[in-house]
Length: 424
Ligand code: UD1
Image 1 (tube, rainbow, N blue to C red):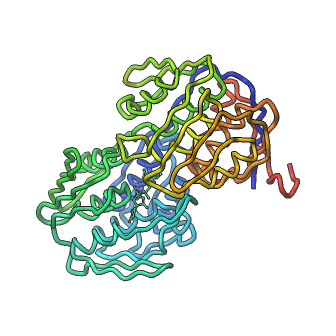
Image 2: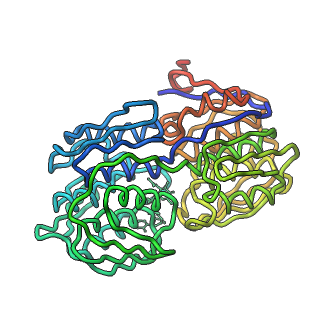
Image 3: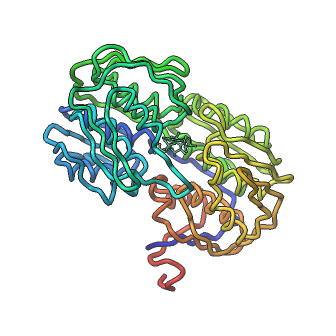
């Protein structure tokens, strides 16, 4: 157990290198099960979800380890037909991708129901319905899922009932080796979907996306490759929310601006000055930001994964705002924590109403990854010291957040023990 101690009140100035995108790295790492040769993946963030995904592959008999700071070598030639690492799987949402890859390679997948971030019900019904449409039989209860297609999967046209990143990715993973053409409609268009498609095509797959449709022409085999993962748009946007809280100027390096366009417009509307090239984003703000109201939507809309961080920022604005989460309508456990810091925030149904607040430092609990990121933002804006428990959630998805913030003037340190047992 560790906790963060943050002494807020400093403006932030400097440069931050944005890491590779966790939500691309995870499906791409699991997709290496489809490839029986060496794959070298670059720009892989060293976050605990990635370490756990590599550990699952190793437990199954694969070679999967860092060969450089952010470069991983994976070879799954000798992996077992049986999934291992049940404890890790049940803690990680992205382990659901094991269903698609194992079904593709071994015609069967038996695993614990995938876990994930702690912000409400995370069903997998769309994934299972998709596998059934491709000819698999599925048996599942609250604890385990068993999927099999002993005679192989069959190409079909699938229309997802709802836009889902996970289900879209699983349908791609399941379709790569199916004879004929599989069409997937009403898909998620997040950059991580395109990242996976680029990687698989580099390995010899024939997958294309046009707007909300994916066409997959089956191939017999994939070959190894080297591939660099896209930058993490949520990490870049999280630091952008911090700047509005603290004021200052930061240069975010190694970004892909096309992924940040929509959200950048929202920040400009709040009073930020934003300059960019394709790979760098300079954000500046030296006044109290204006409020805003957003509804989370699938990409290219406002990301649900930025909702809690924006809520923190709104506490520090002139006029507050409303955030409605249409993707995860119960993603509000951070609200109680912000209230401990004197936030005037209330949750009604699937939205939060936030008024400008006189925030003050407090001890809070990160309730999930993005909630933890939001509490860091709030703490950076308070002159008093704040302490945040449950750092384990935050290190699931933010590489080197303590050293990155320190390098731009944040006063933040990580301390052993949580604040409750008194061990510092
Ligand atoms: C992924 C991301 C997560 C992000 C989310 C939405 C990973 C590891 N996680 O999660 O960070 O917040 O996309 O951008 O990449 N749904 C169903 N049935 C299903 C699957 C989903 O009803 O079988 C619903 C969900 O409850 C939610 C919506 O579909 O309301 C979108 O969820 P989805 O895009 O699938 O999220 P994940 O892939 O789990």
